[in-house]
Amino acid sequence: MNKDAKAVMTYHQETKHHFRRYARSSGYMDWRNQPIPFRTYEGADAVPLDLLKTDPPGGHRDLYRRAGHASRPVDKRSIGPFLELSMGLSAWKTVGPSRWALRMNPSSGNLHPTEAHLVIPEAEGLSPGVYHYNPYPHALERRAAIPETLSEKILSHFGAEVFLVGLSSIFWREAWKYGERAFRYCNHDVGHALAALAFSANLQGWKLSCLNRLSDADVNRILGFDRTDWKPLEAEHPDLICAVHPSDAEMHSDLPGEVLSCFSELTFQGTPNRLSRDPVDWKAIRRAAEATGKPRTDEEPPSFTNGSFAEGADSALSAAEIIRRRRSAVSFSGEGLLARNHFHSMLEMTLPRNYCPPFDIGLGPSRVNLLLFVHRVERMAPGLYFFHRTGSGPDRIRKYTRPDFEWEPVEGNRRLFLLEAGNFQDTAVALSCHQGIAGYSAFSLGMIADFRETVAEAPYRYRHLFWETGMIGQVLYLEAEAHGVRGTGIGCFFDDPVHQLLGLEDSTFQSLYHFTVGNPVEDERLSTYPPYHHLKR
Image 1: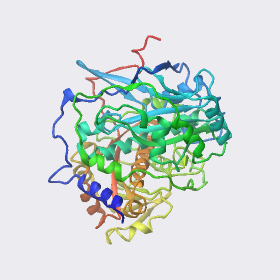
Image 2: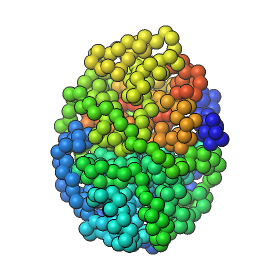
Image 3: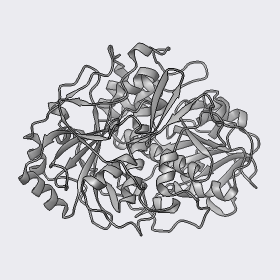
Image 4: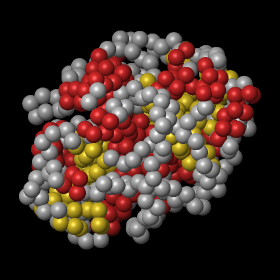
């Protein structure tokens, strides 16, 4: 194991929560120092985007189907809806004098460290350029002009109508509340955003494809981060760049050197706004970011099964309605049963398949399975279950788990196994930092990653593991809304006690993210306002 892999393992171990202590953080909420939730590039020309008057067609299952979505031209009229239904605002909430925005893409603590940038070589209504998306005004901030020669090189390389979308993370936004563990949460949120972008692209007849050979340095160069005057501790860390293209077009997973060289010659405009008066330097996050830096690689997009989804419960809601209604529940009633077919449908939709968003973006092979605490599901015995969604099947992890587990196949779902029957509500609550939402739900789960070998082979894939869990989380969020319930991601859990429950004795597998689904209890103190009621246009 090289020094970077060892540094990653050290970071992961030191940021675990334990029953007797939590991972290091400030220990209190410094409200005067809370980061501004919206990044803007002051001095950059802003291009307002139109808001949807009519949502794109498509029902629940059309979130996942490629067929039936005619590819829209890449222009200002189509890019606006693409961003609105992925990275845009979904509502405003108020209670007393407090007011805050919700977004289509979920975020740990609603802190939103993830920023989106677009590289547009050609689009009617938009000048070729590199843009930052600001969801507050639903506008693109033009940071650099792209000359005609570079536009031609990009379009010629891909051989299709295309634009690029890049994601970056502002670690301080999460570290303000969560301290050293925030690096984990920022990468969850990259996964949430990737899935949100993939679903929204599909509704436009487009596909999201990762340019997974690029290095972090390449992303910095393309987005101009290496020529940006960042405020201390408020820089955007490069995550990845994806191509957005017609769903039937074959894509490269790289950019040629001559194109990258052209990006080095661009002049970038706009000064990043200051987010906090006094950001705190969490050195552990800085070390983790350095250890997980991605070099240039020769990765090929992974291949999954081509099988179709099993027939399951559909929803009366449209695809866009499901996206717009997504919320994080804060409390569950602890009453009622989740329909068995809804439960199985939710699990089914987390499976990676070729030609099916969001997991067909080409990020890498699936490495995450699900440990389920089933509490209230129709015609299912309460208990501890395991759902395998990776290509290796359950045998690889089974030999590491407790020998007394039953591993009894569940009728009607060949990937689901009962490990132990019984009431695990109190266990789920205790393991999830004593949060009642893990036990008063219909079910909760932990996402168990094939960890040690993945990190040892390529330390940068530590980030990818969290991206995959975030993508799973976004699927579960949307599936919960589709079936009349609600989901919540849980980043706070006691890591090693979860592993001990399974019988895992080393770091071969690690739990990286928890999630829970149930019947929500609405907070009647809150008032809700439309997402863009603050805009005059």
